[in-house]
Structure formats: structure tokens, C-alpha cells
Image (cartoon, rainbow, N blue to C red; front, side):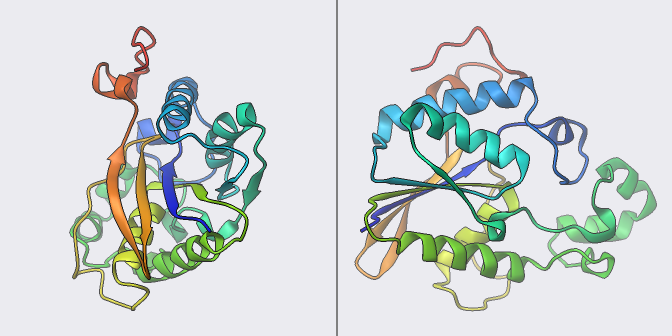
Length: 224
């Protein structure tokens, strides 16, 4: 039985750096470095083995981050499109600065959680939470494994956590706990406690991330 779930965000992309919304870009040089550091830390701290199940969203950045973790361990990487990032409709592929200039009120409303982005075909948080949360819980019931490593995306992970907190109830996203953004290649960890999943860490990263400029690469930093 799976007793521990890790929700891991992908490493950095050029789109993250420039503020371009979502899409399907690959990891950049820094993102590859971040993924290697986090993979090493996860392996040392939590001892993944043949009973570890690895699943990614299928988007390039998620797949790359997952394989950097799984391949050295000889683990297969499964794919589930329900773990893909939030769909941004007409805003997909556009710069945040461009959208702030064109739609200042709607962008401000989005940041405040007022849902003003939905008129542009952006996927509602509740739908993101439902598809990602249900996917994670289904994978967590896979027999023959004891740890589940999910490689996904910042918004998806936050919405999934809200889903787990609400035990699947369709609660308003203007209610409930507020979450900070997850850093690239950081993770959150849940453990099974009887009939519920308890959060044990949020936005956890390798020690090197706290000793260097994580978003710049920190090539001279040394892992724990």
C-alpha cells in the first residue's frame, strides 16, 4: 500500500523566467541543474526503491524532471494527462507583462483570486483540483507500491493540495487555506493516516537551494 505521496514541481524553464504563461517549454540549463539536485536529495532522504511509483504530466518539463529522478534508479515513468498544468485559454503563451498592459483589471482580479481570468477560457481552479486530485488518489491506490512520486506543475500541485484538504468536496477556492507558490523542483509530502492524507511538508527542497541563488543555478553550490 502506498503510504507516502510526493508532489514535485518541474525545474525552471525559460518561460518561467520571462513570465510567459504555461505552454510546453523544456527545462533550461538552470532547470536541469535544479532537477538533478532535487532528485539527489529525494533519493537520499526518502530512499525510493523498486516499490516506488513515478508519474508525470506528459508535458516536456515534467517528463524531464521525472526522468532525471527515475532513470538512475531504474524506475519506469508513467504519464497521466490529468496532471497537466492549468489551461489558460486565450492567455496561453502570452507574457504576463503584455496581459497586465492589455487587461489590467482582469489581471489584478486574477491575482486576487476573483476569477476575472475565466472569461478568457482559463480553466477554473475547481476543475484543475478535481482532475489532479482524483488522479493522485487513484495512483495512490495502486497495489504493490509504497511511495508515489508525482511530477507536475505549480498551480496543479496547489489545487491538488486544496482538493486533499477538502477531502474532495467542491469547496470555493476563495475559502480554505491560502498557499504560497511552489518553487521550481521543490516538493510537498503527504503521509497516509488511516482514512486521510496528512501534509508533512510543503515547498521542501534540497539543502543546496538554501545556500545559493536557486533560480540562477548556483553551480558552485554543493549538495547536502
